[in-house]
Amino acid sequence: MNKDLTIFLLICWIAFCLVNLIEGIYDDIKENKIKLNCTYSKLILEVLYYCAPVYKQHNIKYYPLYQVSKSTSKPNRLGCYILEKKKIVIYVNNYEGSESERIKGIIHCILHEIDHHITHLKNPDFKNYEVYTKNVGYSSNIFEISANRFADLKLNDCIKQLKQKGILS
Image (tube, rainbow, N blue to C red; front, top):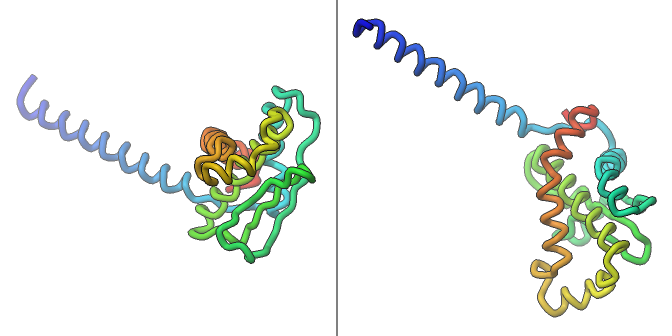
């Protein structure tokens, strides 16, 4: 092969790689932007539907009750699971950042609280949640670690499914 042709092919290859790199970066930026196309109540319900296979796997027939709270009285509280009522509460006004960051945070929180609901119904030791928190702190509570792991594991797939259903764009 002559030298000019080799240089031309090398330049074409570099240009091809650069175009693919730029397209990949653009797709990543585009994918990270999320817009909510429904109410927060509908979002919670759709995330519960997303978790239906997990509920089925654990032989749980009923979803938790859920509530959207616009209260900001406890600024560091993003959501909670009320054991006695089997209820998830999401404090939607306590999320900061861009719209995409807030929506991702809310979905993560919903998944986190769903894990608490499942654990409450399947693990009798969950009744000791407060004792664990008192003894080791909130962040080191085994139930918090488990719920965060569950939410981290499910978040991207859940967002993808919500986009497919038109709940997010």
